[in-house]
Image 1: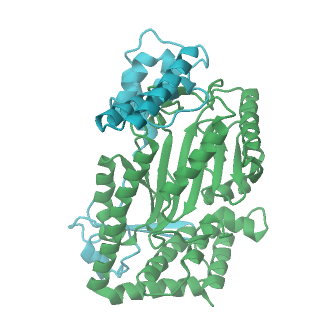
Image 2 (image 1 turned 180 degrees about the vertical axis):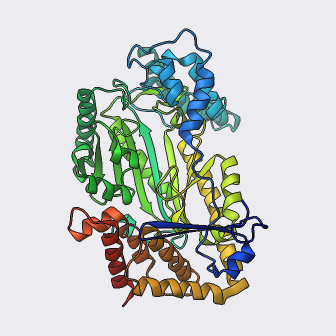
Image 3 (image 1 turned 60 degrees about the horizontal axis):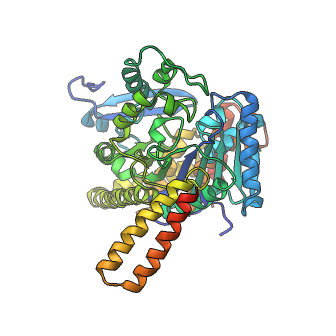
Length: 171
Length: 341
């Protein structure tokens, strides 16, 4: 954008003033701005592109992924169709992640990269997963204990692992 | 200590106004918000309220039915960042659980069934995360969350999958704004998986040089790692801002001092001030204070930042409605009272 005043230089100073609901805007180059008395160094801020429009971005990505889904599918729990998800970039329920897993997984990889969850696990739904992770970390501890010749500690760990393995079997 | 977080000054308080950590959760047995019947929406609110009531800290929480709250009350909560615009303006049965010190706000039936939010003054990412996890554990033992081993906590928007965590910090960056460096900063933190936004979330412009910086990645890293990485990025941003402030002072102290005192003058004497103007003036003053050019209580400035917002101003007036002109006059009165002493 060229400076409103001289029409020669690039406008690098953008002013917006709102007085009693009336908006006044000025786009000026630095030298015109100071000539015209816009000397305040605080009253302007460079235009930063914040509204990159997550909604638009998502639905655009989703529709290109879901376009490959023929014929259209419907989620048995919430009734969401592949078109619904393509339009909004959002799913309708937990079961949608199973119903549309083929396309959703591709979509998710494009957002997050090829990765899987490594954070917290709910007590209710994730009992088994928790046990498995606990077991993995105990086994690693055991290996380290043996390598370091900490046999007393290794014995404690071994018993703990045994107990957990029993628990896993019972479930 | 009894002061609410949004009236206090915390760690790195010259630059960091506040911190928020939120966890997105959904119940396994209900469709996500927007796909539920009104009966289901009611059941979800009741189930979550009940789970909270039977948790150890249950007595500390109050259930607020957002969907039956007057417009003004909803906006008041939003301006204090206790609820999102989506919860305030959304459809269907919506509610919130608010702790007595207002540092924990659990939004029910926003985009997800649950949005556990913990807020604090200044830079306090670890503390907020710890508290959020405590609340999550308390609710988890009484609810069945939607969860998948690979995808983690299931959310309505796939961008929140995994940990469902969003840690964000509100920053005052006048020197980076003035120098234009904020642009390249927004781009480079973007490459690291963080987003820069204006004060009131997505799409809102940065008024008064106030920005929110938050993580975007939610899947593949655990909660502690995500929060730590954000902390590392913030430490650098804070250092840059301080350096730019020093440079600005070196380059022209008189001009800055003059601007700060002019803003102080306007705050102390103006008869009509718009929200945007007030935010800019307070921003100038805030910077003046942290540069040692002006004396004022940062906590007072933090409080004024939301007291001058339209809904809070209207509520304080005791009236149901004020025209924009009436608000500007009241805002000027409020500011005069604060700065004429």
